[in-house]
Length: 441
Image (cartoon, rainbow, N blue to C red; front, side):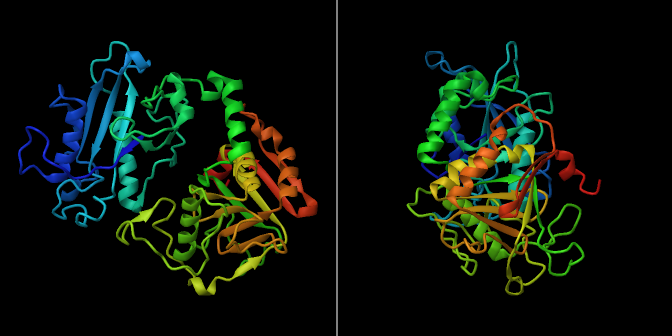
């Protein structure tokens, strides 16, 4: 899934001057790419969102792209959304922010799908997929950024395909970007990042040794810029008896958690944002920091901030607690990222956050070089409401990497898996998805 950042500009050739400026800008870019397809097939919202309809995208244009045989780029369908940016400039959907502000949410979505042999019309399921992503953006006011990972947990086309998640980047034709790993292999997308729903191999299956060596070498020398993921995860405070419900950690499967305060949510958001920056010294924003956003109106929220993040308990009354012993629980997909978290982030002086998709639970691993954390070497496990921080020394990280080595194996493993470090009072379980999907069972 790609994104394009629309901007206003001179009217495209042949367009009526009174054409709405946002539509004009996107149509003009599409006309530049597809001069022979002035009237592409479109999926159109029957009742527009601004008239009370359920679909935020007014239109999704579908173009036939011939690819580029000289670059081994296959023929495909190219989908372009209209509606996440401000198409009309008259406040019917988005607040008009002027020339210096973002256009609506500041981006549109594109998607490229391999054209199957004999296929004469583009499948429409990508349009519904894009509407689903747009509904999420409009309802949560979370924005997408290049590099975001979207966990769909289901085949994108509702088939038996193994393609069940999405990476977002900038459209390679509308706004080029360099992503060497996936650009290298035609079967994994190629330079134009084309999705093939029939692809059964991962990039590691295509060339296991070369790709794994390249990834391992990059992680070893440069670390990872992935600072967090949405995940199926929970944590338990083993320091307190289970009957101590009033002051014990209330985040457990089957219970109603305290919600993250706005300030905690903002800090986690900033944690993930800073993970994408190349700083010499990693830092977590302080809990008492005030929200600062000069890039977009305050009504817009970046990814990871939840629409339900208003605190049930006032922020000032939620104290930071030091815990003696904790139990972390992950599903298999999240568990397999633990080696990356440890080797690619903590060994490079960085941090990594798991944000639960089932609630406000968050688990942040921090190294001793991260400033602003409320977990310390003296008290390595600390919680602020439903947000747990775990500080791991380099020596302990190396020990954990050895003990968790089997999680590097990509094949399905028998669950549950239990890992325990009694001297550190830390326990990790990797559990089936059903435990998280059906918490009361």
